[in-house]
Image (cartoon, rainbow, N blue to C red):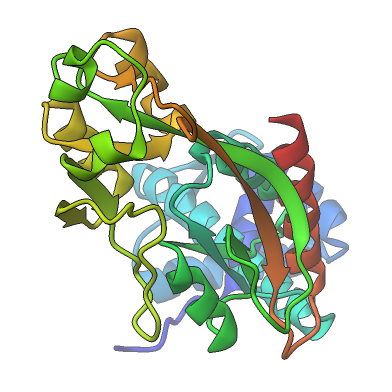
Length: 296
């Protein structure tokens, strides 16, 4: 690719001439001489091979080519300014990116509120968001691929910050055989039925958390898939109440009348990478995750 012949400073000069209404005004705004500004524009037009400005009376007016190129140049200059700002922030210790790993059971609404609040404070810092299940979050934290992690597991060697609890409820379709018993259900009633469970995304020591030892077990990869299967009459499952509230309200799912354990509350915890100190962006995001866990 050929190197550009026109510099960013030349594009800034053209923008100043247009924005301030003429060469003299641009020269004053840029703290340069009028002859320097005039030479810069003339040189630009020579390098580009197209006229950018024409003089009408005492005013510089953009040509059609000038209108198109000026519009594109504003994007280029803005991107260059953002790049320079990012380099400065990195020099000051501001991260270019935060790796956030979240258990799939964590409420999306809470997460969205925290990320929305982070955006105007991020100073261009990107967030790489990744969802895992059970020990999958733990593995990301241990192998260092997470700067921040939200998990329902107590992870040895890391200091947790407790977040609000997530409620899981045992549900099945209203026409499921368990509901047809029309009585309080026992552990033995559940063991004879198909249970849908979520696959632990960890590879080292996956857990069977929530499985009751039912003779029939279907394992799926996501909470959404489990909810859809159960809503269509395939088995029962414990699912996060916030994820299925609309299905319950619509009558596609119904909470099982268990003797005990129909509702389970699980606290989730926020962890930080222990191998490197939190940078300013990571710390801001961590504080917002804690704040919006409490207020959501």
